[in-house]
Image (cartoon, rainbow, N blue to C red):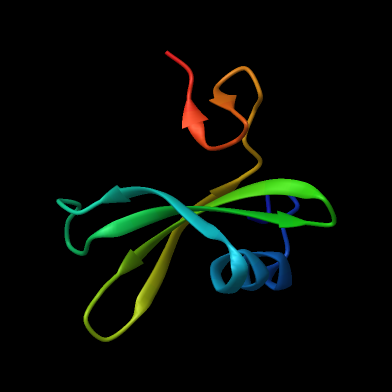
Length: 76
């Protein structure tokens, strides 16, 4: 997040208000999800692991249009 210049406030906003667009139920050690949200009109993807007693942020990035359709569906 620091290398990509994405703030903690932006991540919190996405996690609280975003849309789950992919689920990775078999991820270890905890299942995770990919969340799409917007900050200042800009799209952000946040992957979080949902463990029993905590939530872990795995990665956060700005989705690239050459890899995503409407930021929700992966291009083949």
